[in-house]
Amino acid sequence: MLRNLHIRNLALIREVDVDFTDGLNILTGETGAGKSIIIDSIGLALGGRSQRDLVRPGQIGLAELVFETDDQGVLESVRAMDVEPENGVILISRKIQDGRSTIRVNGETRTAAEVRRLASFLIDIHGQSEHQKLLASDVQLDLLDRYGKKTIAPLKKQTATDYAEYAAIKKQLGGSPMSAEERARRASFLEFEIGEIDDAALKPGEDEEIEKTYRRLLNAKKIADAADEVHELTGYDEQTAAGELIGRALRRMTQVAEYDERLGQLLSQLSDIDGLLNDFNRDLSEYADGLSFEAESFVDTEERLNTINHLKQKYGDSIEEILASRDAKAKELEELQDYEERRAQLEKKLGEAERRLRLSCDALSAERRKYAEIFSEEVIRQLKELNFARADFGIDFKDAGRYSANGADAIEFTIATNPGEPRRCLRNVVSGGELSRIMLAIRTIFADADAVGTVIFDEIDTGISGRTAQRAAEKMAAIARRQQVLCITHLPQIAAMADAHYGITKDVSETAAITKIESLSDEESVEEIARLIGGAEITENTLKSAAEMKEMCRQYKKNAL
Image (cartoon, one colour):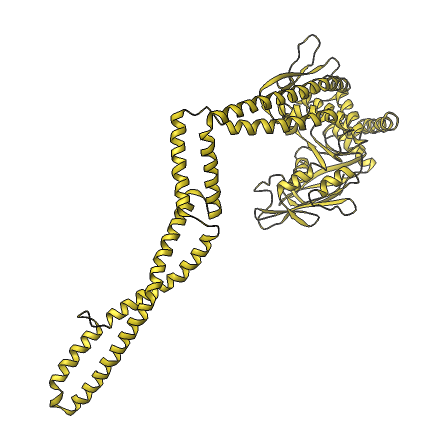
């Protein structure tokens, strides 16, 4: 159950820290005091969506919940999510800052989806949106299946298994049968692709080795290109090459060297340069000749790498994927060659699978119909206790028109709220208040079997008053004997039934409005109930009525529960 709620810097709340008790925890307050923020903060901590303006800029928002449980089934489910409760305690916190949030469970970071799943074992929140969900056929079917889960669950499991087999065969069959022309065209294309892969003679891991070799040879290619270019620039084959130019300079200097002794010395230096350059050019040529084999290898490697990359673009990101694609295409080709026979076999298997699935669906549907009668009778009984004195509730079945892992049933909750009226679909009949009572009736039915330790009712009393409100309070008190209940209400009848009463207030100053929540003493609880009875002006009579109402509820819990 939820032991503690700690909120800081969320919307109108600066800081709230409240401990909840076993039984029925009632939260009341003026309209606009911030009651919804309390529930929204709990939902936020449990992985709900965070609104952009929930936390003021520069502040750190926090919603923290402390749960405690000794239920072995819940503990096993929680441990299956790699959460280890410490003495049965689970701490869930969500911190929000600058639009980013972090959720931790017992100190370890978790995703919102993981926390939402974890929350499903710990708490059940019923608000106006949950009431509306009750109108959905799939939600109604899930409720019925939960009610009869002892015998329905095994049948659902078998149905899901049979459906998976049926769907797999149907997928193999594909859509409409292929014509002979289509098969021939497809077979020809597959043969081309298989041949393209086979011609490459790929070896697993070859691409990695080829890429390594290519990177090594790529540098060798750069060296060879540079050596060739330098050999050309320093050689004698081009008129602009250094060797040719020095040779011309040497010949021109020779023509005039005899006229000046100094020119003879310069001629000797130039002759040495010519010799050195000639030696360099010859040595470079020999070096470049040694690189020719590497250059040829580079071309071969590059071509092989291009071939592999081309196949990767078409068939997969690795040679292993390309070869797997080849095998898949070969299998498809083989199936095309035996198309008629294979399709006939698959159609036969599909028919057999469908017959098994139909039997499973029929068995599941029969069990659902059996429990639908029992469930309907129980709902009617609960509704009568909630002042639906002449209500008639039932569940209509129809074929969904398709198979699914959940069977072939589509159901509709139907109700007649007045005598002599035919039952009609829930969504076409009930008001918000009536829907709240129906949800409360169903919640009462599931209270004994539900392992969830905490239930929250947010404005479930919408649209009810008087004797009906008293009956709703009695139902909540009954549920609270088996589960912890947190209820936000504006009705004095429900507030008077509280085992623990909390007041939510909003302090308004010139600079800020701040929401607070405090545990109320018995005297303060009476005053709050009087406010709910009489409004802004509390008289001695309303205080007396509030005290009497609270005492009546105390006697009811003592004697009737």
